[in-house]
Amino acid sequence: ESESQSGLNSVKTDAFPVVDRKCGKSKKLHICPDCGKTFRSRQGLLGHHRIHTGENPFSCSICNKTFSSKGNLQKHSKVHTGERPFKCSVCGTALKSKNALIEHTRIHTGEKPFRCSVCGRSFSFRSYLTVHMKCHSEEKPYSCSLCTAAFKRKNVLLAHVKTHTGEKPYSCSVCGKNFAHCVSLTCHMRSHTGERPYSCSVCKATFKWKNTFTHHIKIHTDE
Image (cartoon, rainbow, N blue to C red):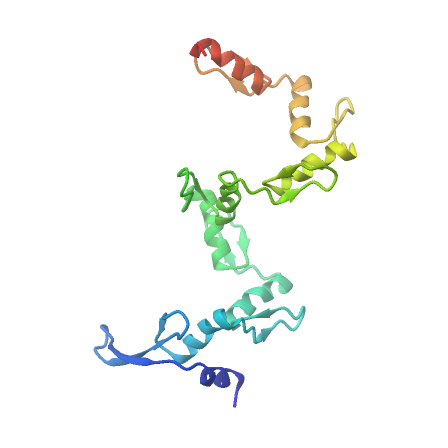
């Protein structure tokens, strides 16, 4: 008896007949005993049921990582083969999976399907929304091991740690001055380039620094 068939027999389910609208024939739907979700085949039910059991019978022959379905194993295998069969029709970028292509396409379309339920802000990727949601939460899971400071995001913690270590990995190519943060180097470079990226929409005055620009705006708003 195969592993798949054994798994099928171990899942006790109820099946009930329904009429297929396309062909008019009666078919059976199989019900998941844990969540009630229905499937047209026992095989489909088996694949779904592994969500509840945690079973991962499909193993990668290269790294031994295991998966609940053959399809997920096939997607994973592309990590090792380097295969990128899905190509963007706009810019030609090749991607490993259809889902990756769908996400990439949003760069071109501007689509932002993931919406914050608190403030309504939308994002192109679910991961961006997950990071954003932390700004509404008081949770600060990233703690500094050198002091009592805690942060909502890992990148902010990493930037903070440099205040303890004195690390300054960002160096000015013009004068050689070093900085702890990339944004500090970017601001410093304006002293060499003369760039003034902040422009007043009222009087057209331009500024090198955001804080100077913000202070200037108050002249027009009477704050």
